[in-house]
Length: 358
Image 1: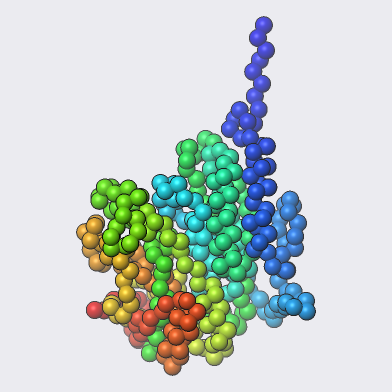
Image 2 (image 1 turned 90 degrees about the vertical axis):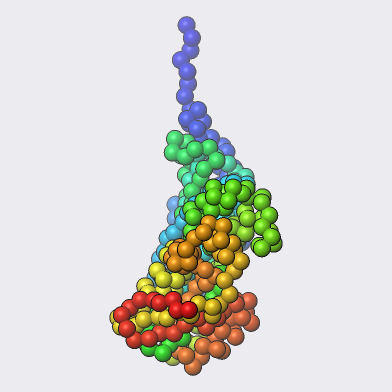
């Protein structure tokens, strides 16, 4: 008589030994992001972080702290990463999408957690993803303190995966920037994006690969690189830029009055989110350079200009609304610190919204 088949977790698609190997490979990437406020304790059920901290060389103390929380993903840019077989930069995108949102409160990013889901354990892929997340946290000056790697063999097709990220930050209650102090006459500053960032990829992929019939390795003369490399450029993280400006222009002086992260729906969809009633923003087309990638996508896909501005960031990844008296000095400081920035418009009285003027 044949012995009955013995079923194991491995036979169901999950190899616990491989899973442990994957987790062990993450530890160095987490540790390199940790500052003195992270209470070390790998292997526990939760992460610990000291809000107030005092040593001779480092101190952080808050009078009336308010926690800031954000979550986001990378979207179909992950499809492009899979097409290229390059997965070590989408983690930067993951961090950027949540951290840049948190900055819009005037907050300081503190810690980050990730969620990665895939059909089977893949230590090499996971290492590349965590490497990128770790790099993003270093750029954002926040700590990668933990996460979840979910192995879902019946949920995803081979080669597929998904990611989500969670950022927690802090801001003093009387330093919160929420747009309420925006006035008519204020200046709108646009900080340059590094590319598409993490929005509009369903349209971009359709243009490049379905409509134009390209592959990720197709060179584009106007871009000076392949279409795949241009599209995969990581999202710019603005944490150091915002921290530097807020340090030089304290919130109590009401110099920086509004901050907006330009994501899905572009400038038209995101800037009005921070405007108080009876404040309208007018942006001047031509006041900032449109990167060649956007021009190429528009021409290759015959995309209407209005649609381009509705879907893509069009070269502006973050917006500051500031007192007009300090606008030029803020632009100069940003440029000196490696963040190209431009005066792109102004605030006027009127119904809350945004107008793109030629």
